[in-house]
Amino acid sequence: MTVFLIVVLSLCACTSVPKGCTIEGTVKDKNYEGKQVYLRHALTPETYDSTIVKNGTFRFTLGETSPEVSLLVLKASSDDLFPVTLPVVTEKGVVKVVLGELVLTSGTDLNDRLQDFLLAVDRFGDEMAGKGESHGKIKKDFSVLLESSILQNKDNEVGVYIFRSYGSRLSPEQKAHIAERAGEWFRKRLDETNNQLKQ
Image (tube, rainbow, N blue to C red; front, side, top):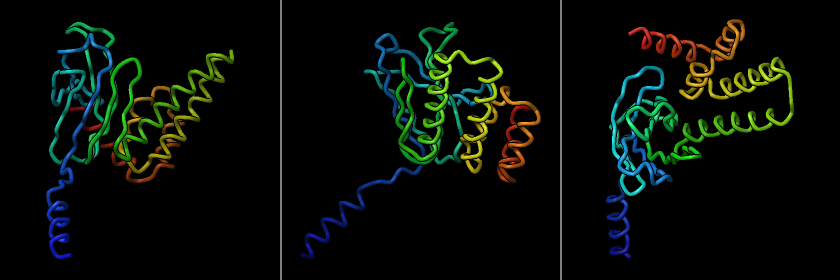
């Protein structure tokens, strides 16, 4: 029994818990083999890191980091005007992503939340395409989706990302209403991201 316990404890000690963020990616399209994948700031053109697609995969290993939404950008060429782009939350753990015709992110709580939002936007677009609704109705319904998604994520970086990235689809009054309902932490993060944009 003692030997068994020692073996089990030894195995547990050898199992490492990720200290930072690791992004493990798969690229389905063979045309991207050998191409660069960039990890960029979500709101500015700053590039944090890059790596190459090899055997249909890529990997970023980041140190300990505070949760933040970044962008993965995959270009077919240096002058590619329509690169494959995927927002991803760099948070502690292993983030799994797929880049291609479909883009997916999962593996951590905030990336699952981000994926839920992205799927909701896709579903909304699909539903509206077949309904023939007026522009005003579509805009109103989409702003309801945005407000709901932001408030569901008012205490994390996903909510801040949605507000920042999709805010142009909200009126100034809607933005103020959402920021007020989202609370102090959310408003503070908006101020911090405003300062990042000014630099």
